[in-house]
Image (cartoon, rainbow, N blue to C red):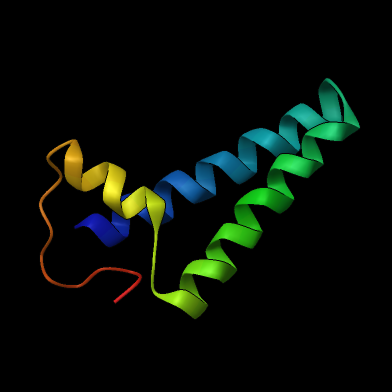
Length: 68
């Protein structure tokens, strides 16, 4: 369950930042890069800040996280 939330949030952040880069300011692509770097970092280190945030917000962990 938590894995789905993390993927949905990351995908939403990327799409929103791409739209903002097209319609507002090209510098929003830095945010897109930031999300990508965090996804890569969590795959290498198995530590995910968004996972910790979601757990504190009460999202159930079905034992299958994106970072474990």
